[in-house]
Image (tube, rainbow, N blue to C red):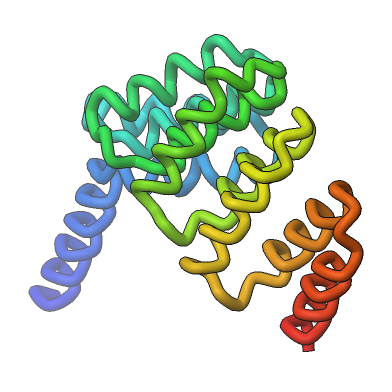
Length: 189
């Protein structure tokens, strides 16, 4: 009997500790977010913040919920809150950049992508979207530079080889374009 009481107490302690861990609620929020259950995700992230008002991953999750709801101003504020607590959080910079990119506010998106890359040199998506901004604004030399910088950090990226092929094709350098398309194909194998 004594052993059963001890085991029950031990299990209750584990459950109680988990209920006081903001990471548990944040993970739950992430699961709801991935299922597009935004209200439930928001409740889980809010619960994490009740436990720890400075839990950056919960603010990041809230920002993602707002992004998926097209509430871009609120999303940016949530990501800025993340950065006010933890300035070295490249995913928050990336999401701010991504939103500004979608809003065609490139002058605000570019520095955020650059910070994300500086903080996380292997941030493939940041290189791709930053290069694409330059491509879409006919600044092909800068796009090529961004993609090449990315390849220096992520040498096996088929996406960056493909992007370089596209950029060279747009400036009429078919020889270089074919070279990079070929390298992209080789990396896929």
